[in-house]
Length: 456
Image 1 (cartoon, helix red, strand yellow):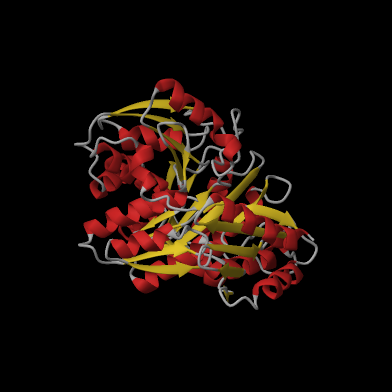
Image 2 (cartoon, rainbow, N blue to C red):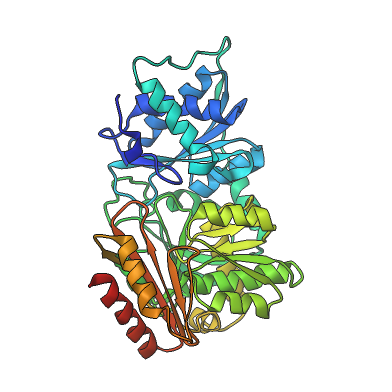
């Protein structure tokens, strides 16, 4: 099919509506391009539960095999299970998923051997250009190899679960009752195996794999999609709740009162545990819109905090550069050195279970230590001119003696008792605001001041 690839090849992945924006014929070309750009002799591929995923994955595998590349298919898997396979097998990998997007979407997350990310600056641009050249009838198609590659199947689920459980010991915790909302996504596939045999009473919600998402969107970042889990945790008098997104690489936590736990608080908690595992030494990565709490906790536990831009490619690059042991984002992506610097919400969930299960206080008390400030959450505003509005904020705050500005990612304005960041969306005419302060009144005042400038 002829396609406008600029609409489906994003900064970090391929994503679009099937079959309107891309289909199996394009997936086959993506497979050939991935093989050519990586120069790999073998790759591993997996997919989520969306109706279009098996066909797209098979086409991608055929495209790679045509160029002589051996393909290992691991079938249904979470994104972090695919990263596990890429790391353990030391092969480039392709995961077919559109994460939390609606059912009509699908996509590909690509990585090099060892789960190293493939983004615009690390191969995705070359892949797009190859596919574009091949969809032009005047351009030569990829020449088949004299001997095509093989396509074989293997199951990595039990090995993936064993690897995670070797990193966090949850076998000797006190008995816990946990409600898990898989959102009809891949958590319904991975959670039973990962948590099997542990001292947990697991109450499953929406574990049926269904890429049409009949109960709610598989995006726990939207508070509306946590309502069912919050209610069930209270009804069951559970110790906590866990919610996974569609491809189960992100995990959100709800305490025993049904209240959401900030991903920044989870980042701080896991950071403290990872530093303890490493003798109180190590670098911890956090993006610039995580809470002030995160770098404070890192320093208190002997570690070195490093602040980065928002986005997994920046986190993973800094993890590799600095040798960091852990990294966390406000969006509930958690990255581990012991997991090839890749993100796995499941491993973060095991850390929370281990931390809670080795002491007697409820989760709300445990995480209070890691949730010291008041945040606004992310607020999106549609604007006609992103640069103009950021310039207006810079002008409004730039002459204050007690304020510092930095432009690592958008504009961050920091004072003694508060900070806020405004950054442009890469794909929409939006500005994203995150604010935090030492108390609710100050946060509300600063948030409203910033929004007034943004939306004027």
